[in-house]
Image 1 (cartoon, rainbow, N blue to C red):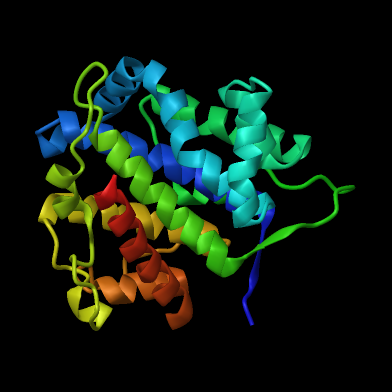
Image 2: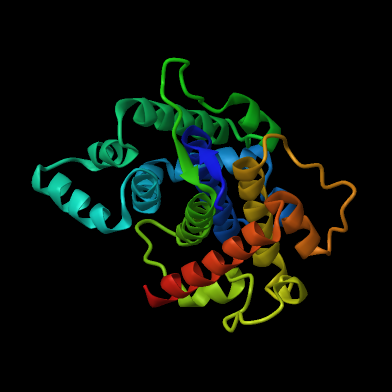
Length: 268
């Protein structure tokens, strides 16, 4: 039986994962010196330079995942068409995707919280995120998302946002994903194998970044406390992922969606 995750928690994880992945993609596309990649000065400078690109990137990445939390997959395309026929702007579409005003307001708060941290040159830690994300009001009815769907949506956000960030190599730059995806896909193009044996077969820099992004995303989605990786073997990726995924089932859902998302990105 599929487990459930509180909808506010899922939404907060999606928003945080977008900003984390997009910003790291931007930084990796434009900062060559590893030591400079996550300094407060570099993070602040690049986020200010890409200030006007972040809202469109957020909409492109997040509309479907937010809508998929609240609507059936087959209804989302019709939902978007109806909104466009009304002449809804970008944020009105996102408001529709969120389902109701309470979730929209929570999304906006998470957006502001994450973006303001980046503009200050900082990242929210997993612990700070889990402590401070917007939760439901006492009078609200509790709502949840199937854990499989939540994992799949989070994987999509991480990978799409990271690739979108990598594309920000210049003013209005168009991105040839095929030039980068070989450095992004964590499982290889023919991912029919024992995943625990192959998780590390990837470009060492881009792979390491994507793995960390995915570990953090699964941590804040599936657990209530930040995981301490101090006692884990850094090279044993399967152990690290199982630690945050908690079960082999969740691990498999995650890796299967990584494969699907990679294939989708390659087609665009």
